[in-house]
Structure formats: C-alpha cells, structure tokens
Length: 223
Image 1: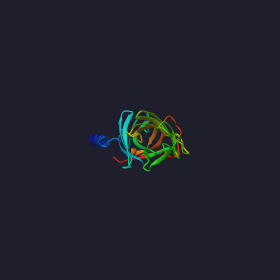
Image 2 (image 1 turned 180 degrees about the horizontal axis):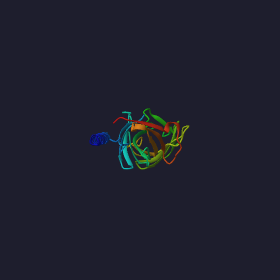
Image 3 (image 1 turned 30 degrees about the vertical axis):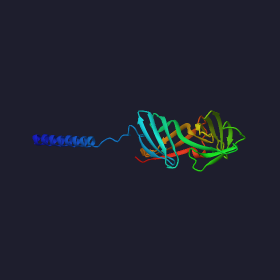
C-alpha cells in the first residue's frame, strides 16, 4: 500500500510538472507586443500637404509637397523626437516661385506667388524701378533692385500677422516682368496619436512663436 501511495504521489507530481511546462511553452509562443522603433517613418497627409518622413533614432527628416496641383510649393523639415517618442519638434522650410508684372506707370504690380492662385496687386509710390515698399490688402513687400536682379522680403500684415518670406528674382529685358523664387521658414511641434496613425500640433513662421488660428496642424498616416 505504501508503494502504491508513493507511485500515486509521483504520478501527480509528474502531471503537475507537465502542466507547468506546457503553460511556459504557450507563454513563449505568444509574441510580445512592442512599440515600433521608428513610429514617425511613413507618408502622412495633412490639410495642405503630403509629407514623407524618415526616422533614424531620435532624428527625423522629410519632405512635403502641396496637394494643390496649380501651386508650386515644396518643402523640407528636420526635427528631433522626445525621449518617449511621441513629440516631434524642429524646423521647416518652404520653397516656391513667384511672377509679378509692373504697371506702365510703375505705381503698382500684380501677380501670383506661394499658395495664392488669384493674382494679387501691390501698390507703391515708385516712378522709376522696383526698389521700394509695396502693399496689398494683406501683404507688404520690400524690394531692392540692382541691375536686373531684385531681392526682397514679404510679410503678412493681416489680422494675424507674422508670416515672412525672402524673395529673389530676375527682371525681363524690358524691366516689367519679375520672376524668381521665395523661401519661407519656421518651427513646428507635432504630437503622435495613439497607435501612431495620426498626429496633431502647430507650425509657426520665422522666429515668431505666436500660434495663430490657422497654425494648428493634423496629419493622417496613409502609408
């Protein structure tokens, strides 16, 4: 009887060990869930741009293009990810083109640039060349002409002022057409949403950190 009792105890112990081993094996078979190493890498769509971002460690770089096929604006951005990986902040740079035509009396010029599709008209008190300050309803432009080269800056003077850009262009032979490129820069901070499928944040212009109503941004991952 004692032998049978010992055998029974041995069988129960062996069964218990097998159950524990099976549970451990099952636990090892389930892959551990982890956060992607580069959650910011991918293609994102915002209300104005398609952005392509690439993350390497805590550094993120990328490019973006406007969704409007009638506007020639592209840009780049560089940023750093926070320690927890959910906040991306850095600087952005827009590149675009403009084309302006001077009036016959040199008192105004009109044309398009940046995100503006409809021609805007700028007025000044000039009677000779492009040098001077010119104003439209929402923008003020300061130009300096040197031969057939014109450099300048433009500032948004609307209700939420602060946006600035640098311009450089070349004049046509008759001096009436000015064409060139502009650069616009600023800072951004984006917050990654749960699951890494969207972000929201702000983009400000130049060195001004004031956030205006239309400076709030959001993007959705599309790839």
